[in-house]
Length: 75
Image (cartoon, rainbow, N blue to C red; front, side, top):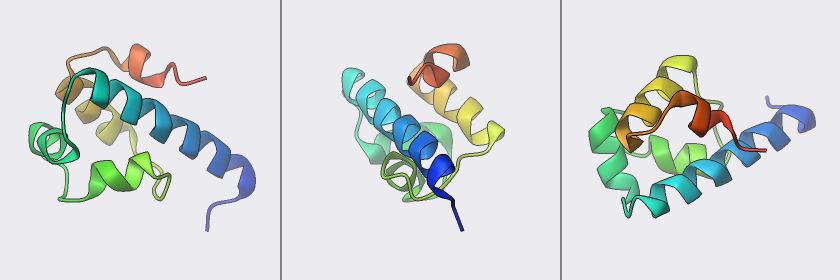
């Protein structure tokens, strides 16, 4: 179970990921394909339903063609 403090961070990251994805004009499906993540993973992260691992964050950054630093700059 995710506590309220963690939920705020996870939601903020998800919103930031969505913004970056849309800036690149990518669908969730395309980013899933580029990252080789499971079918609905990008959507689940963007909605704050899951807490992504470091390896998932690395894959997302590569899939978006950005640095991990830019992906993690969500505040």
